[in-house]
Image (cartoon, rainbow, N blue to C red):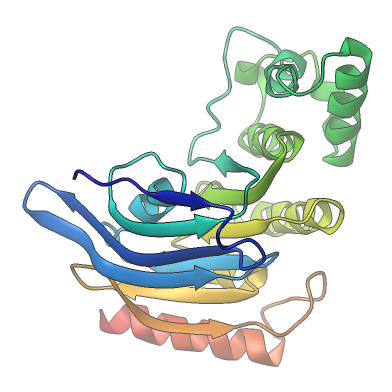
Length: 249
């Protein structure tokens, strides 16, 4: 690929807009002239089979892969919660989070206050001096969420961060995510394989299929954040539709 183009600021107010995206690995075209828009301030969940291009889409938005086409997004930065927490194993939780703030806040006391406040908010204030190896999977993900929200950004990318967790813990972390977004709104693009996770988190959802990838179906969840459960009618309907589509692929 010889064109990499991120139009920072041109789509301000529109969240993230992908136009004419083409990504190829050798002879395989993952995307070929692909278009999609992610509304400002919403949680947009992307689903689809393995290898369809979900992670590639996130990486294109983040500028981590070469592509052709245009990606419009706000001027602010991008936070990324990966499948693995990517914490530095040789330093404490507090120091991992302090590293995020050093480039934007010079005052150490203020950094300490922000880190401590975020850890308390995510109910892991007692883990500040622990090392990553001493954390459970759920605790590590909370630290990754803390890092993403401490970094000043307008866009948050999430690549299956809850994949190894049971549904109860996923539900609690989705609620934690909603709480963070209430005070620090971001445009979220959230990839998952889990249909229940999708319908409980999403404001809007998209299922990708095919090679090159296309939008197979999309929809919205109208139940307000904080009031979602699998027996809410529009969530149950979305769940059934997505399951039917994935089963047909």
